[in-house]
Structures are given as C-alpha cells and as structure tokens.
Length: 394
Image 1 (cartoon, rainbow, N blue to C red):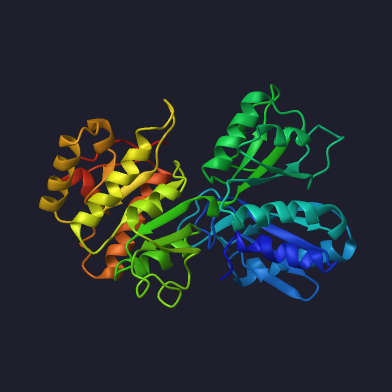
Image 2: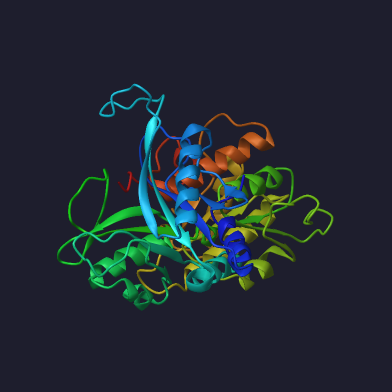
C-alpha cells in the first residue's frame, strides 16, 4: 500500500510526463472508517495510485474523480457514507462517514508544488500542503488553491491571504507536528478545527503535513530492530538504523529503512540534528552501548535554547539495568528533569515477549506519546523507571 508521502513522488512523475491527475484526500471522518484523515489517492486516466480504503466508497470517489478529470474543472467536496442503513447520528463500529476533497492537479500550475512536497519527503524536512477547501464568502478565492507551508518560514502561508498571525502560527505548529486536519478561518483570521462539515459561510482549509518529517532513529541493528524499522516505515516515520557492524546494518536486513549508518553510536548520533520530531530508540547489543546512546542524546538536549523541546529517547532493558544507568547519569551531573523524560524501560505494558511483540509495544508508546502525551502505569517507564507521569494533551 502506498504511503501518503509516497504520493508526492508519484505526483511529480505524473505531472512531469505532462499528465494531469485528480488528488482525492480524506479531510474529515466521523465514526469508524477504513482510512484516517490525510489518506489519499491519485486518480489518472490510466488508473490510480494509493487508496482511501477500497470498496464501494473508494469506487464512488474514483468515479467522481474521473469526471472531474474529464471535465477539466477544479475541485469539489464529496461525502462517502459507509454507515449503510445506520442512523448517521449514532455511528457505531460497523461504519462511518468520510469527507473526501477531490482536486485536479495540472502540469502547468502544480508541478512546482508537487516537487516541493516530494523534496521535503526526500530530505525528511517538515512541510505541509495547505489547500483551500471552501472559499466561504470570499468570492475571490478558488477552492483548490494551494500552497506549501514551510514551518521554518511562516510567511510561506501568506499566499492564501486573510489569515491572522495567530492562524499562521497554528498552521505552522500543526505542520511541524505532522497533524493533518480541516480548519475553519474565523472572522478575525484565526482558525479552529472542523468536527462536522456544515454550511457556515466561513472559509475552510485543509492542512496535510509531511509525516516523514517525524524521524525514528534506531540505535542497534539486532533482532528487535528489524520489526521495529518495518513498523516505523509502515507508520510513516523516516527510519534511520545505526550500528557499527556492517554485517548487521545493511540493506538486506533493513529494506524499509530510509538511511543506514555504519558508525559507532556516539559519533553517528552526534552528526545527526536531533529535534523534537526525533524518536531515538536504543536497542543495542549491550547495556554499555545503551548508556552511550542515551548519554549522547542527553548531551545534545542540555544545549537546547530555553523553551525548546527535546527529542524522545528510550531504551529497552530490565528494571535493574535501567536503574543502574539512570544512577550513573545522575552521578555524572545530568539534571533530574532530563532523566525523568527518558522512556526506560521502553514500551507499553502489553506482556510482549517476542521481538515482534516488543517492537509493537515500543511503537505503541511512541504513538501514544505523540498523539496524546499520556504517561501512566501502562507505560513501563512510568511503572518501573523514572519517566514523569503526564495526562493527555487533549
């Protein structure tokens, strides 16, 4: 299955061959649906690339997209009802509703946008496609108008017009955090999330971030790292594997990894630019190497500007092994606040035993941390380590 970010290289290839296409994107969901917000597919005269869930719903979107392609017109919003005969006000687990935006892309006007997005994926650089879905009362605006938002240059959102500094800041934050969503522009220029699409007269934009800007950095290329890299890639992370043994860190063992680094752990990590979008996981062959990994990452965190968040860092290991490592780090002068952010032992308490189960446990904790910020007794680090408890962000 093509990942959302893979769409952009295919978009460049298609437009570069002077062929238009229609991009179908899930911009809002209600109830249980086969794909999440941000899922997308390209529809061309010769078929499709990607999927928004398959079945009759996708077939109907494909039909409408082909009509849009043949009509040589801009964009429209369509609702895909998967509830059958269920009351739409009481959507259960058997079906839901997807709002899908279908938008015609042309080689003449959109190839540059596609190239920017594909380049951001290739470089694992935070960016987002911001598309005007509904112009509202702004008659001069055209649905389908789009811009690539660069979080490092908030002025890049200015082309959409009518957005306040607060709105641009919100969009930039969502782009950096890889949070897709449909947003409504209020009269004062600020934005708010749209839960249900109903007529309001206000403009609406969809922000679609490059998820590959979220980096999973796996220190250690042993038996746990193999399923961990595969899961990380499947979930849309840019995956880097580090090990000093070329017989372990190679393309044969890690076909899904975006980057493989054969170097000592400390020098490899020192050469990487670690930020709050990085998830450094230590699954090395020994506790001394794990401590080296954590120590190297923490040294970078101590030099961050005030108020800037550091990266996620975690390691597997027994309770005794974790306690010993944290004691060493504290004796060496690392601040308690930093040590309380280490996810060790790493993973959610699901009783994992096999390498594959441990990888699931690790990725589950990363997803939980990223999506909700919750840390409680279900997190092994909180249960038997020093990881600071937190409640959900939202």
